[in-house]
Image 1: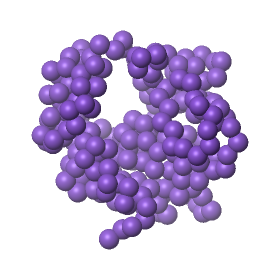
Image 2: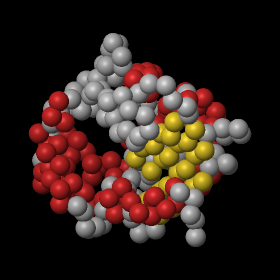
Image 3: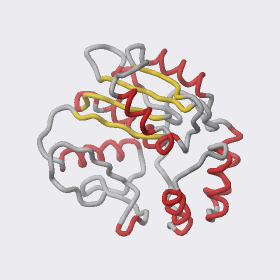
Length: 224
């Protein structure tokens, strides 16, 4: 975990996998061992929130794998949260499609800028992506390999009963990683009090880039 400036308010975007210069490295939850389990991730986020100083319930959000981490933290520490935002969460309400995993494997095993761009072009169905963001994705090909923490789907039972955490879940209609409609139905069953919706005509990896305005509008509660 990089250094956090002690300032109230936010937002903050900590990254457990980046070291100096944006390079991935094994991280430590406080003074403990490197992140290897869901419990380690929960401990790391505890340390992040503690490091930010006194505060009330916080809003925690994440996209994709980051949403999986956020959901696990919410399941373990619901009392610390006031709001949970999950943007096209993977392996929270639905598993990954085998075809997506097969297409992603070459990028994971031996990443190159060409493979990364080919995969993103396929997954986003040729969406116009920010050139600066694409260049950053190219740079990840030179990052040392870091195995992400894996584990089961989070048990969100603690969030299902009021009074609880306000939960917003937004899925990407054109996501190739899972069936967005099926995942949304599973999310509504698991969290009847959550606001769950599917954003039309957007893919999983393009979601934060191409639908930022719509995400902000819906999270503000201005549903049409």
